[in-house]
Amino acid sequence: MILIIDNYDSFTFNLFQYVSEMYSEVVVLRNDVFYLKEVEKLSPVSIIISPGPKRPEDAGLTVEVVRNFAGRIPILGVCLGHQAIGYAFGAKIKKAKRIVHGKVSPIFHDGKTIFSGIDNPFYATRYHSLAVDEESVKESILEVSARSEDGEIMALRHRDFLVEGVQFHPESILTKEGKTILRNFLKLSGVI
Image (cartoon, rainbow, N blue to C red; front, top):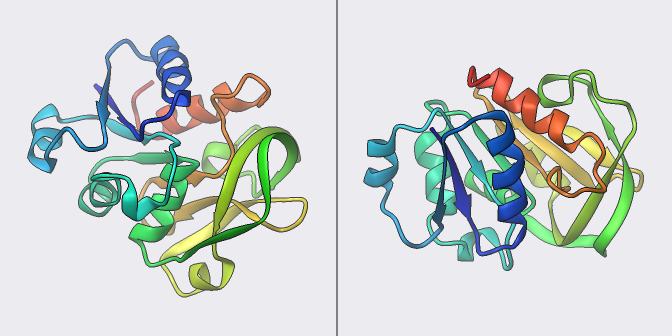
């Protein structure tokens, strides 16, 4: 079973739809209506953390899910989920260089893991006013795996565990490589 943590965002339904096309058993839980022990009992094969409003520290148990299950269960964070991964591992969250809502941008990546076989650059849809702070990532266990054309961090990964975050929205119809990125994550997770 794949667990999607819903951070009260309509894009969660797009994530559910895309992932359900690749794997039949997908469960969605809101970020404030479960306990960590329930996640243990569900025994998900991977966890996807959805976009959402606000900051990671205001997103229910989202950050605690990352801290508790990183290294045991593969995790992919999208937008707020990406920021939650950064925050969980000591990165700071700051105002983005510019606010972007529904903007399609070129994304430049390292071609590894979830970006394997993806055009470089590829075009992705962005909806965010916050971003992970570059300087704080340098002092963490995370590495930058993608950037926007103005250098904003667009993806991170944990150096030792299968924990990946993307600031852009792979579940947006305007992100042409979105399904491939999600499929790559599920393949890396051993799910498909």
